[in-house]
Amino acid sequence: MAVVLIDDEARARLIKRFGEQVAVWCDGLPAVVARLAARWGLTVVDAKPGNTGRTLICAGDDGVKKVLKLTPDHAIAASEAAALRAWEGCSRVVQVLDLELADGAILLEGIDPGTQLLEAGAGVPWAEVGDLLVQVHAVASPPEFSALEDRVVFMYDLAERGLRGSVAEATLSLETLDRARRRALALATGGGGNAIVHGDLHLGNVLDGGPGRGAVAIDPRPSVGDPWFDLADWVTLPMREGGTLEDGFDAIAPYLPGFDAERVRAWCVALAPLFVMRPLERGERTPFVEAMLRMAAC
Image 1 (tube, one colour):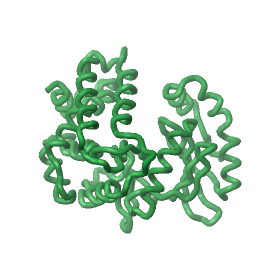
Image 2 (cartoon, helix red, strand yellow):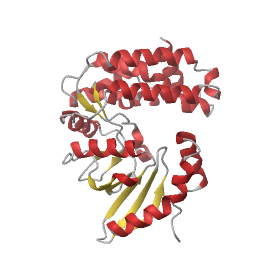
Image 3 (cartoon, one colour):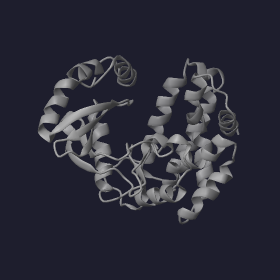
Image 4 (cartoon, one colour):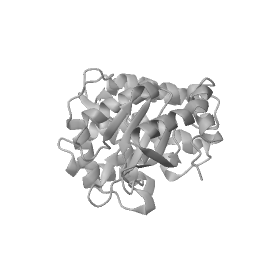
């Protein structure tokens, strides 16, 4: 049976993100995929959800797993490709095989097994996560990359649009979100560093590369700035199991030279509202959500 390249749910998600005009891109996707599959010798075997495009799991004519990513926003593809090219040779980052930016397309190596790193209740491999962060932040940043400040502005603008009039707004006010925005902007412009920042290093964007590879980062939204921005999703992990932020610090600090607990804590406070928007929309009031709300209110 042929893989459905874009279903109604995926189309709706893309329209929500990009507007009604993206329907034209959705309609034309099968033809683009067919052309690229013929060019690169691919057979599509699965399609994965995404907020900015489609991720297609493919089998190459050489029998090797590959991943074809496509987005209607060619600027997203270009910035992702530039970051991945900068990280070429980094074992903790997915590698680019080919590009067709005129189609918003990137061909990537397939990661095996390619499941989320923390699936099935596995413990956090802190040494691998630390090594990933060190590799990502050690590479010299290309001159064309935007500043972390721009990424922060985009994130909070998107969050405000999502929060305004939503179920979550009854608990998380626009004033609280605005205060968090100002905190994040102060950190982004406050001289915290000049590294390539992954920009979207949440748990879903770190895959299991198997015993020989371990943690592998995917889907960057790169910028240049304070590398401690990338830690928030990781140091808050123990809080999801009833632990503390300090537990997260203690777990990751041994693997990150010069660990700056003060700046990492400040980023966690600034980003706290973004952690809880989706859970609040689903009516979730877990201890983790309550802890993040208290952090955002402080």
